[in-house]
Image (cartoon, rainbow, N blue to C red):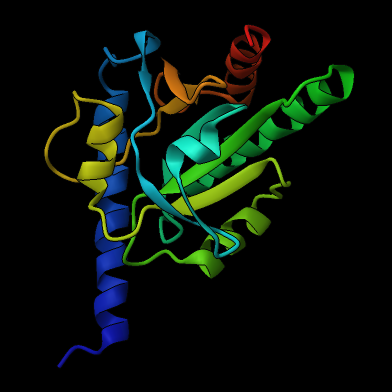
Length: 200
C-alpha cells in the first residue's frame, strides 16, 4: 500500500512532467495572448495565503504598486527554477532602478498553482532559494485548482490544469495591463514593469 509520502512524491513527479511537456509544446508555437491587455482587466478576486503565513486577497496585494506576477509551484524541478532565476534577474534590475527614482516601485509575485502541496514554509523557502527581497512575495490560493486560477487570468486557457511561463503585469490600480511571451528574460520583465510604473 502506498504511503502518503509516496503518493505526494508521485503527484509532484506528475506535475513536473506535465509542466515540462507544456513548456515544450508552447515553445514550439507562437503565443497569441501576449502584449498589451486592452481594455485593462481587474485582477481576479482570489484569496491568498502568503509566504509569511498572512492571508489577503489578490487585488489588495496588488493595489498601489506595479506588479509582475509569475505562476510556479515549489515542487517543480523542470521550468520553475528557471522562472525563479529570471525573476531574480528582474529583481536586481528593479532594485537598481528603485535607487534612482522615487515612488512605490515594482513588486514581484510568485503565485503557486499547487494549493495542496505548497504552504507558507515552502513558499518562504522558495523565496530564500532565489534571493528574494521584501519586494518579491510568494503566495498560494488555497483549495483552488490550477486550471481555475489560470483561467481567471486568461480566458483562453484550456480547462485542464496548465502551467504557463508567461509573466502578467498589473498596474497600480490592480488591473492586468500586459502579458509577456513565454519565459521572458529578466531584462524584459523589468523593462515592461518600469514602463507601466512610469505611467502611474
